[in-house]
Image 1 (cartoon, rainbow, N blue to C red):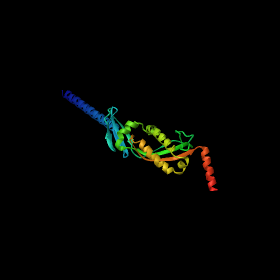
Image 2: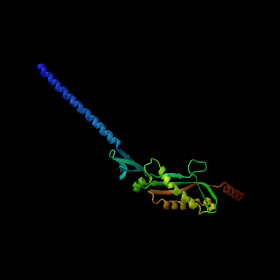
Image 3: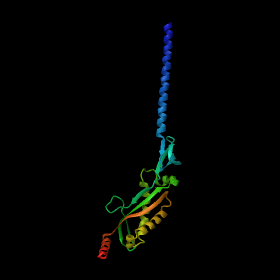
Image 4: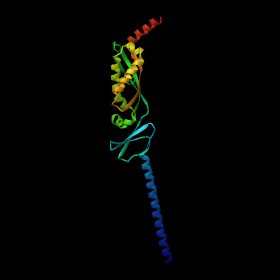
Length: 219
């Protein structure tokens, strides 16, 4: 009789231990799952970045630098650098990019030219950045949107100056081009810091004429 009671007690103790182990197991699994969910939905926005938060595709808020958490499934986060960047438009003949060409006021052919712009996304209009330029991880959309403006504005401007002025007074041309492009890009959420004409290549025939004039002058 005594052994039977002891067996029952031991049996109950075993059940209690198993229940305790099960509870501990579920607590550990739950804690690990919680940590995983927090880790997967935590976002650290660096200095020089801003983020747009959307609820099922609709913009709900923006985040500044710091630690943030998004709601799983419901929210998506797209971060943007608001640091100063540089983009180059145009390439020399034979390059992989788009060749920009134009005519001067005296009908000299500019076979190719390159323009460099220094810019950054406007932190105060980061929601508009999302609307205009989407969620691509590079600046391909930005360059696709802005490139036609750069091309059309520069082409029209070159047509206002003679080839000699373009060659000899590049600073004047840079200033005029920067002013025009800033006017054209006002509707976009970007800060245009500077515009510079990096390279201009006239037709070979015109360059030969310039070389001949320079040789005569030197002589």
